Length: 188
Image (cartoon, rainbow, N blue to C red):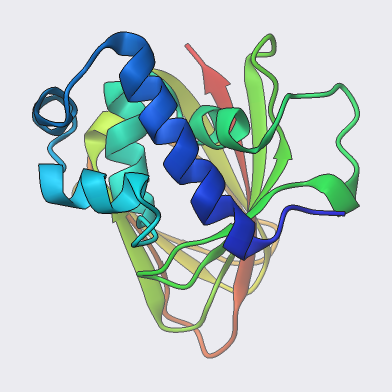
């Protein structure tokens, strides 16, 4: 059975605290390294708030992890076979997008993530989240606007975009219905 969305918040909270403690970092040090306030980190670690995708990306980057790597550590060990019913789910509280970790293993350079972005929603991701990865997005259904710095890409079902050099990125669904897309990430 897949990890429920509610359970994942507590797992993320425990994992962030473990990652910070393992490195011997104070809240202030993690805040300085990630650009996330001490108060926010503290609330996340106590499972009082659910972090947004942008905040998780910043925290993962501070730990030298991808978002998928951080979530994998929070939600279990990576097996070679990733059964649909066991793939972890996480919902971004800011955009409402639903993220399914299709495949990720610590010993494998490839990660696959499926995202369902609700209509009229978007997420802005900092360039720092792309510094150690290469990625491509393949739209499975709906329409998606991807803005990389000054470049705009309108994608429809079946279209695929390979990302360029790291820059701030906005991913938006300006359509009337949900958009489902697959993200393929490779660590560099």
